[in-house]
Image (cartoon, rainbow, N blue to C red; front, side, top):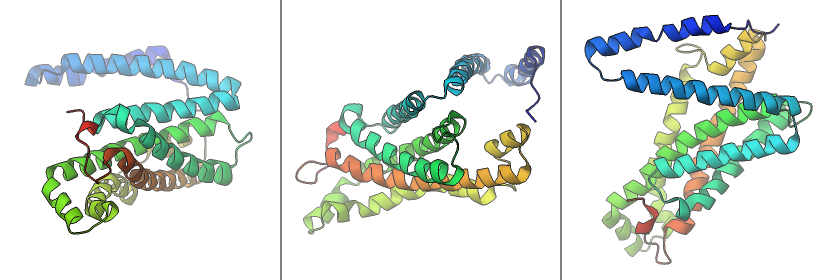
Length: 262
């Protein structure tokens, strides 16, 4: 059984619901009316274009097209991480790309190819949405971890240099900052996992139920996806931090100033 299709006339009515936040914004003088309209327009155009593109991908279901789209998602996520973490793309792009790619592909191989085992193994219906969820969450975690790690070392430079002068290796000196960067990157996902099913019903599970899957099947997929996402987040935050060190520190284990955008 497929999900009930929403008619275009009904979609127009749903857009009309936006009058509620717009009126609230006007009454309270929040100054967000323009932002609301632009954001909704961008969402509509972006999701519309994505829907057409994914429809094309699902129809052809070609291994090269699917693989290329996965790599494109990873590359775009990497650019976003570089930008939001305040790091220069030229300095750390390839090391971060390597960390995100390795972590994502390992988890995808374990979850999709070994657990779900779709036919064909590169089936876009499974590969694209699940990869998107994994990469999107890894992107957010990496932004937190990288920004916290490098800004912390930068702010506590004297303390960091003291570790080195006392004979600590670079890996030993960065360990406290690594811990302090990874913990907050994992915290949001741990909170989500702990409250799933009580505080909120996750999007993938809801989507599968609306699509006609039984609740038990939907729950199995959701548990698997959450474990896959958390594993990928843990791997990618640690791996990208360690790999980025190769270009972020000089031969004397001093943090390079030119890795920062400012």
